[in-house]
Image 1 (cartoon, helix red, strand yellow):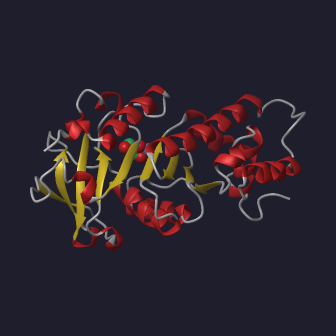
Image 2: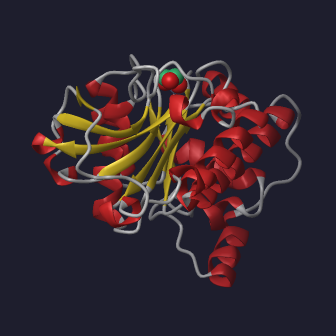
Length: 270
Ligand code: 2HA
Ligand code: ZN
């Protein structure tokens, strides 16, 4: 057996979580990330017949039967993950139609997956239907996106258009825009269901007055997606109180669509 700490997905996740913390997106135990793994990804590293313990999930997700996930632990701090991955992360396999998680590795102090596990698993189901390559769901608390939810209209078209107008590359990076969930109690199946519904039409979902969810095929892509939206929100928070003299027009957005071969979400541009 190879050492799981050398598995590319584990190395990649530890680096990404460390970077998310460095960006200030994950104070204290803020944020959570899940990565879909197949048994074939794990076979060289773990005895898949050895289940450490079983943890009830509190929801059903029959689409994920037999899927394995590398997931951040509840109450754990991203800043600490690099020093003790086996305590702060875990690998689980879903069985019983998603109602039970079999722990295959990690959560070594007796812990379990993030409190936002329902939102993660339901979002994986939603994104897989749109993009079979999707493997990552990422949640964090970037300050400028959060700030924007206090001062900007939460209408999804308006919110998306503002972000697109803040940096030229935004429409290229997230042509499907940003969906918005109003303030809801976090950690519940209800916010999980609401997030997953919004994930059907966009890879970015803002949780008002809380943070953001991103989804993508790998950690780099998903990190980059959130990074780009957060950069746009930062520009917005720098200029929102100043007289607006220039912007990126819808005609220029259409030029970007043509140049980069992307299609803006229907109805979002004039
Ligand atoms: O895990 O970010 O939304 C801490 C959180 C909950
Ligand atoms: Zn959060």
